Amino acid sequence: LGHFLLGPISPWAILGISHMTYNVGPYFVTPTTIRHPYLIHSKTMVEPTLLGPTIIHTEHGEPVYRSFAADLVNANPALSRLKFLGSDRALEMYKGFKLHMPALSHVVCFKHFKDNIEAYLRSKIKSEND
Image (cartoon, rainbow, N blue to C red; front, side, top):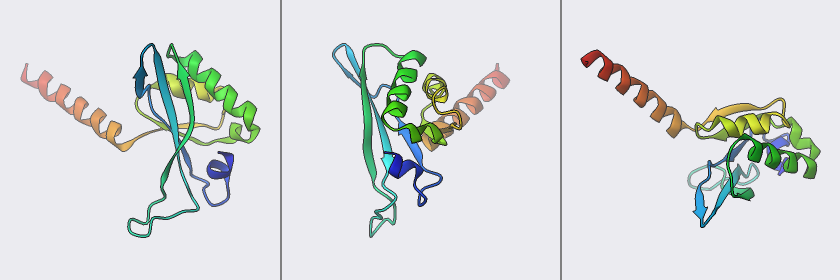
């Protein structure tokens, strides 16, 4: 994981994390994703996205993500230098990871960024029409 996220070829690599993507009975499965910086698709010229470490949990919130980040850093201390965490709008993920990865910045994926702008504009138009 550190090889892909902290290597010289990928100084701006992002660890992607999905906010409780799958409910499996009483469990939540939250995967991470990484781009493989050493492979390029011949047609799209984009690096493939790979599944990274995944957490299976029964609760959600900052303590769960803090524990997940601690496990990642314990497995590979270099991950404490990770610069970017990409996710949806769930700040509890970022806050949980930030404790163990102090240089971390939160990057919202483009789809959620666009959704935020649209929701803001809708609220402004609605309030002006009231």
